[in-house]
Structures are given as structure tokens and as C-alpha cells.
Image (cartoon, rainbow, N blue to C red):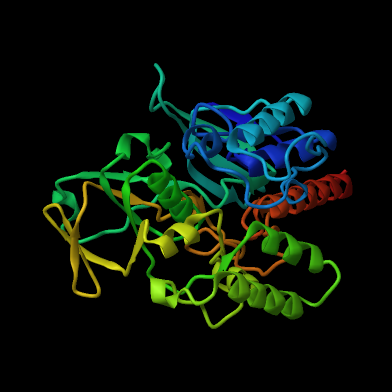
Length: 386
């Protein structure tokens, strides 16, 4: 197997990988960007629903060294953000190597190089292996990797349709159907809203206490963090949420004991940015249900002992990272879930030339910080070894 050497290997061509590639290019650092899909940013381009908009104002969502157009709206649509990524790739001359699934990456102590075994996916050379070597390895596969559907008793025998949120586009085909959304994060809440708008009989599972913020609250919080202590801003935003939403427990949504941004830091549990779902829950157009226990035929059974019939179950249950499967010999940087062991702001740098980007739980803004830090650190390392 012929080896291809490059100074830096970047795994994943989502926004994280694109940001790292741009920063490396600006520092004239040679790299190869590997992507297992047939396009960059596949989650955004192929696996997100039509009505998706960025929940944070555009100034918090820019990638390194390229601002959004002043004419663009404050909260960009999916299509507007994809167009931004297209322009980003063109501006920084980024050329990912597509259909490359990383199967193994390990550091060789003798050569002091990373050895990365890659399998070609799809096409006439499907299954053919390649091997790359590099001085530096950047894990940029992000927080969204492999779609995850939890094990539910009886789900395999469900008489209706089961899909993951990555397969959902809009609610048009579900009009007048009874649909259960499992998962009450931002995707689940917005898909439930979209289904209700298209006339589906919509229910959503809310298992655990959840903070609900408006876009304005999130914006205020992010701005104030630059001027005031974290706990004061977090507590203030929690009070705003109470005033705006009122007591949601009577609708099946409990408020957590801890403040919203603290929960994001500690547990990676993001607050829900409400764009209309709560209004429909209060009006009864969307039914809130507790955790699902099992499925029997066309019925879903819940923790409160009740069961309801459904035509469709949509799992908005997130993703699982596969890094722990293919990355070997790293005892410092990433845990078994593929998330950084070191705390922010030291989360992006490992040992032996290993880095990660986009895993700080700070969204696109965190990606920007990570990419710049990684490129600067690699550049310093190169200069010191000359």
C-alpha cells in the first residue's frame, strides 16, 4: 500500500474542517482534508430540514477571516449559510478529498508520524484502502457525526414509518398524519413546529428539564458575556426566560435547577431557542409526552402508563461520534464519546501533534477560535523544528 505524506491531515470537511483548512492555507502549511461523503458540509447540504435557520446572530457564526455580507439577515437560513460556505471554499481554495472514510489513525513512535488508514467509499473503487502519513493530525469531524437512534423495545416491529431527523425535510408529506418526535433539543422542537404548520397531528417527547430561550435572550447573553461575570449573565438570562415563557410545567416541560449556559458548559445540554414551538404547545397544537418506554404494533407506550397511536416516529436524538473507534493511542485529548478531556480554553490541543476542532460546545464561534489556535500552534511548531 503506497503511503502519501502530507504535513497535516484534517479529518472531516464540515465547517470545522473547512475553517482549519483555511487557516492552514493562510499560513502556507501543506495539508490534506479528508471527507467520507461526496461533498463538504454534508450535514448542512444534504441532511438538514428545509426551515433550518441559524439560531445565533450572524456575527457569532462566522468562520475565520471571512465575514458575512452586511446585506445578509441577522439570522441566516440554511441556504444562505450553505452559500456562505460555498464562497468560503472558493476564496480559500479548499479542495477536500471526498469519499474517504478514516478506518485507523495511530502515532508511530519510531518515525514520529501519524499513520492514517483510509477506505474509499462508493464508486468503482469502493473498499480500496489508502494510507496517509503526517506530522500533525486534526480531528475536525465535529459534534455531528453518525446519526443515532436509541434502542426502544418493539421499535423494529413498529407498523408505521421510522426516520432520523437527518432524513426529514419538511412536513408536507406528513399532513393529517399522527407524528411523534422523539427528542426535544433545537432540532426536535423545530421539526415539531414544522409538522404542526403542515397540519400533522404532532406530539413531542420531552424527557428531561429544558431551558427555553428566545433568539433575543441568547443574543443578549452572548453580548453581555464580554462585559460581565458568567454567573451574573447566566442568571439574568434565566430570569428573562421565566418572564417570557411562564410556568411550562403544566404543559409537560420542567425548568432545570441549573442555569442555561452553565448546563451547556457542564453537560453539553443546549437551551432550546424557541421560534414558535412553545406557542403551539400552549395552544394544544403540539402535545408534550414523557419518555417513551416501548412500541407495540402502531402504538407507543410512555412512562406515565399511557399509550398513543402514531403513523410516524421521527428521532431527533442527535449523533454519536466514531472517533474512539478509529483513533488509537490517544490517552490525553479525547474521551470515549469523542469529546475533549481538557476543559476550555485548552481543549483543542493534544499530544504528539494531535488536535481537535469544533468540540468546544460553542458552536460556529468555537470552531473559529479552535481553527485559528490550531493553525497558529502548528505554525510555531514548524518554525521551532527548522
